[in-house]
Amino acid sequence: MAAMAAALRGPVARFRSRTRAWTRGTRGAANAVGAGQQQQQQQQSFDLLVIGGGSGGLACAKEAAQLGKKVAVADYVEPSPRGTRWGLGGTCVNVGCIPKKLMHQAALLGGMIKDAHHYGWEVTLPIQHSWKKMAEAVQNHVKSLNWGHRVQLQDRKVKYFNIKASFVNEHMVQGVDKGGKVTLLSADHIVIATGGRPRYPTQIKGAMEYGVTSDDIFWLKESPGKTLVVGASYVALECAGFLTGIGLDTTVMMRSIPLRGFDQQMSSLVTEHMESHGTRFLKGCVPSLIQKLPTGQLQVTWEDHASGKEDTGTFDTVLWAIGRVPETRNLNLEKAGVNVNPENQKIVVDAQEATSVPHIFAIGDVAEGRPELTPTAIKAGKLLAQRLFGKSSALMDYSNVPTTVFTPLEYGCVGLSEEEAVALHGQEHVEVYHAYYKPLEFTVTDRDASQCYIKMVCLREPPQLVLGLHFLGPNAGEVTQGFALGINLPKVMMDRPPQTVHLTFHFECVQMWGVICTGDADSRDPSHLLRRGGETAHLQALRPGAHCDWMLRLSHHPCQAEGTRYAM
Image 1: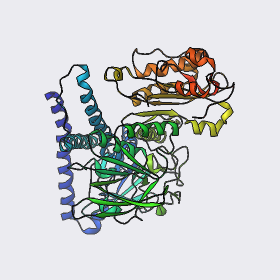
Image 2: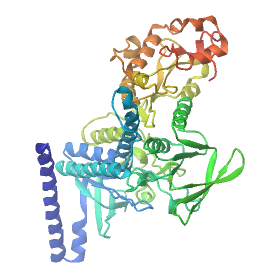
Image 3: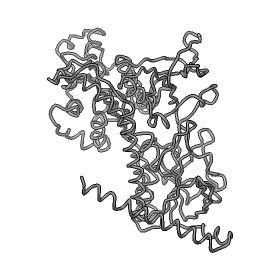
């Protein structure tokens, strides 16, 4: 540990000393020359300039520097309306994936502690959770990552500018620091990787004044208390999940469907599990007014579209999670001739990540039609640098990208949803296999496994190419990551299912895969289902029970006529 600390201090000390040297040099120059000469000295040229210090931008910059190019990164975080600010690293590090997963883990630990007495641990109940301790630990880790990114840039000789950048022309960018100092940067190639920020419903009175977003929730020093989460996105459900998990009174208000863009059967199971474990849902409701009461609490007025009535509720915190907007409005893209989609302000790019200006590129959440996922932005950034400076021609493949929603019961998926598969290939060409299962860890504690579920979407015609895999259960991210390889290498998987680790969730998926490969689906159903018991027997087969480990093929289930599919 001491050696590790010394290693970390080494580059940090070097970075600080060089920073002081640069500062002294600039001040000396300012005192020695006139204003015109100082402005001239501020203009710096690079092979590559990256605007945005998030995951994709940093990956692109570091890769280009590794290839021997002169690289600069310009990054500036505009404080949230609530005044929250953070350091280098982008959304994922500061206000997204990292703090979210850590707080999700905190919630999972609470559940494990409650289960512990079943395994012989003497635990005094009820257990207490300290938001302050958790938040401080999470924030300290995030700050260490901020510093780590700066050290990495320094080690790779990437020049870092903490400035708010905007285009002057297609090769020149103007940056303003927090003190108002202007810096001009030019580059042969420019990459825009500014990401996005949470959307506020500005039409709702009190929304910005009293509400918070994911930009704020992870940096609160005190517990948010009774919380209303507005939205049904993965951000909304993840935040509501961990808030409920650490013992807070949490309500989700959703206008329409949950997890739009994901498989809707799986999405319904996600919210069903959350609802059965303490999260309240207000469905078909839209907020119309936020008012602050003399007590400091927030009174929320909303409209119930189903009943047509208006209702109110009192909360300590209102968290908006209704989508994100790209950070493009202040870049002066028109001065560089970069085109955006007028409907969502995202930058239009081609397969090479190039914009309407050939030497200006965009990657990550800011680019039109790209998944808003950290790993894809990182990979896209590296590949772009390699194409520009490394004589590579490899393009980013955005198909079959795995992802996981870290709700209390995690949902991982890769490939097409059932809805997408049917829309693309037609109902008659799609076969859906599924299974409920009960994790071994749930048995001793008798945990509810009603929503632990696997679904595999395939083409019906042999060799039944797998189009999508959907997994709902513990450690879904780890399971999905492994099977993403199989989805992207279908011939390998369909010819020979992989070996498994016994008593893992991975095993459940491979068992299903093996049935598909051998064509043994119906023969492995429990005997009572072979009597063509109709709808009742079919519904029994869909729930966990004595046969919960077996996979059912929906379109050719023995309870139904040949070639039909029971609508769930």
